[in-house]
Length: 203
Image (cartoon, rainbow, N blue to C red):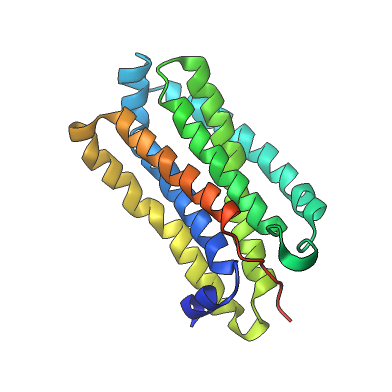
């Protein structure tokens, strides 16, 4: 089964979980977006369009950098003493997502705009790292099931996290939710880097 392969393969499941945590954190932030704009910044809802455009620009930049970052790391360092390129990219992406959510918790438009750019930059790193690791770490006959499992984990999470954030908003307020989401992403990134098992490609 796909989940079993993710558990057994050294480092692979951890990379997928980092991407899942980063997506969940970003979705929590999306669930309180308009409250942040209204209560935190005192701006009209149309300001969400500005933030989305900036985040899109960050995503384009992140996508352009991803290939070079992975290529610069190679498969893994001799002896497996350092994280693989995929592990490092996922960890850095998650840390950027956490930093972006912290910036969005600051009630100041430049900080929120910078947070949107950083979110767009970091989130694709986690997703690309996860699916690159799945492709390179899974034998051909199992690739379909493992890819489907990874896709479900990573992309089904926002469907839960976004309405959960909206439901908690009247009770907690937008800033504690952003801070909790930041802790989730930062924690996943740091733990991935410090406790990484050496990821090895298939074969």
